[in-house]
Length: 373
Image (tube, rainbow, N blue to C red; front, side):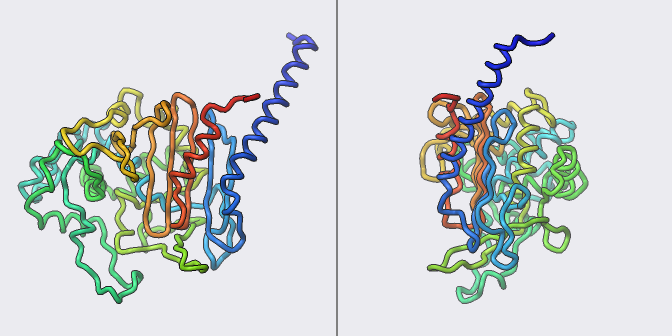
C-alpha cells in the first residue's frame, strides 16, 4: 500500500531533522577529542553505539611512531583489564557446559595447590573477593638500572608457581572486596585445565570465532600475532617513548586480549542478543557481590559495585555495566547502558589520557540526547 504524499513528506522531514541532529551531536563529541588530532603522536579509537548502530566512530593519532599508520576502527589495542569480561565469559561457558561450578574450590582444579586454596571458590575469584596476594608484589624486584625491555616477563604458569609458594590469603575469602589480577590469571588457568586447551584457544573457539571477532586475540609472543596493532606510548617531556611491554604484560586472564572497535561492536551485539549465554545464565555476572567490609571502589576511590568481570554501579541514575583497563602504554574503557541502548568505547595507546574520563564525557553527550534537545 502506498503511503499518502503528506505522510511521505513528514517521514522525509523527520529523517532530515534526525540526521542533522546526529551531525550536530557528532560535532560535539568530536570536540572532546580535538587535542588528539595529530599525524605525529599516538592517540585513541572512539566508538558510540546506539541500538547496536555506530552513531560516532573516530580514530585519532597514530598506531606507532615507526609506521605512522593512522588509528582506525580496525586498530587492535591491548585491552588490559577490559580483558576480564572475556575471562569471566569463558568461565561461565564452562559452567554452562556442566564442566565447572561457581562453588568449586581452587584445590578442586589444582589438587597440588596449598591448603589455603580450599577456602577460595571460582565465584570468589570472579568477584574479586578471594584475598589472593598480588602476584605483582611477589615477583622478584629487578635492578632499578635495568630497562623494562630486558626484565623477563612473567607468564600465567609463573603466577601459579608464585601463589603456590604462599601459605595464606590477605583476608578470609568472601568477606572483603579487593581487586585481584592474581585471581583472573588463575581463572585463565582454570579455563585451560578444565577445557583441556589453552585459554587463548578456548577464547578463540568459543567466543571470538563464533562472534566473528576475527582479529581479536589473546596475545602470546612467539605463538600468534596481533594484526593492525597499536603500540603503547608514554610521554617524556615533549617526546614520546614506546612503552608497549612490561614484566607483567605476558599474562592472559587479567589483561592479555587485543581487540578493535570493529570487533568490540560484535561483542556488544552478542551481549545484547544473549548470543553466548541466556539472560538467566548471564544474571550472576550482573549481580553485585555483597561483602562485609572493603566495598568495591572505582579507580578514584568512589563507591562501586562488581559482578563477574564488570563494574555495575550506575551513572547519574542510569544502570550500567562497565570496566576500565590500565597497563603500560594503554588506557581503555567500555561503558554499557543496557536500558538506554547505549555503549561507549574508548581505547588509547598513550598513558597521559584517562580513557574512562573521556568515555564518560561522551556518555554525557549521548545518554539522554534526542532530536531537538
